[in-house]
Amino acid sequence: MSASKTPRVIIVSRLFAPEVGAAAYRLKALAEALSAAGADVEVFSTKPPKGTEVQASRYPVRRWPVLRDAGGNVRGYIQYMSFDIPVFFRLLFSVKSDVFVVEPPPTTGLMVSLVAALKRTPFVYFSADVSSSAAKGIGIGGPVLKVLTGLERYVLKRAKSILAVSEGVKQEVAALTGRIGNIVNVGTGVDTETFALQGDNKSSEGKYFVYAGTMSEIQGAGIFVDAFLSIMDLHPEVRLMMFGQGVELDALKAKVKDSNRQIVFNEPVAGAVVAQWSRSSLANLASVRPGKGYDFAFATKALAGLSTGAPSIYAGVGPLNEIITLNNLGIGCDWNVKQVAKAMVQAIENPVSGERRAELSKWVEQNHSLAAVAQTGAQAVIHAAHT
Image (tube, rainbow, N blue to C red):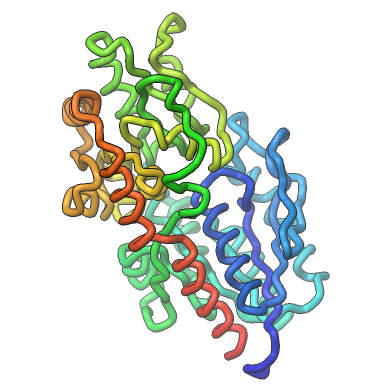
């Protein structure tokens, strides 16, 4: 196509704002950056859970009803297929675009790649992770892992360009595909307007820690529940506020006695509400469990909390552990209950000042703004459309 022509971009993802999650925020920011750059943007996604407020946007978002698991997640082969199969036909009979953008899982990538081949349209794969590595990390092996790895390699090799959220993801993708020239490290960022220092807060709620995000075997949010259980009797004035859903939620609830009011499990809430809680928290909590295939992952929830001025307690592996430690953004520790409990006690006994909160928020704005990440991604998508 002509370099002067306004590209038409279709973004395909089972998650999109206002659903809570890094992918939903990341793709919304990408759509807005593309639209601001003059692209004609359209999003193919799912209907969010009941009760979710959907705000108007300057680009159309085509939402499709989809199966969700008991926790409200679009996670699992049946749930994926309820989106993937319809989206194949939705794309096939849509107005021709200049480029598709698709997020994991690889099954969605497969559908997009097939339509892309039929319609002779390039596609960009936004690789926030490497699904086959994650599957291996949670114990999936044998023929299932072999098929998943082959599928993911097939999709990635056919992508015109691949957007990676970190250098670690870029190297994982390169190892899987055997090529690196078409991989762009766009970085990881957060919506610093939603997760801002200034705004409403929950200071009247007293002292508390905040965990907001998925509770699965990969994140391992149980490390914070176990650590808090070990110290809460010594600090009856402090609570642990858990926001989110995931496959480990029921098991975590089972660890907590019904009479215990210090650990509170809440349904997923909008980012603006998470920000209200984070602004007044003793610390935001984030983790990546070692040995689960995500040792290279960025836990975006840590950046979101820091953007509101809340110091981070980070447990486990991943580049954020070192970043938090080197930049004095909170406490980075091993995947160890005693170390996490010690970090919690330190946060209780030595709360950060308002001045320090402002410094933490400023650091995120300067280093991990989602707007900057989205602009880099938009440039790569437009380049793929033009070439």
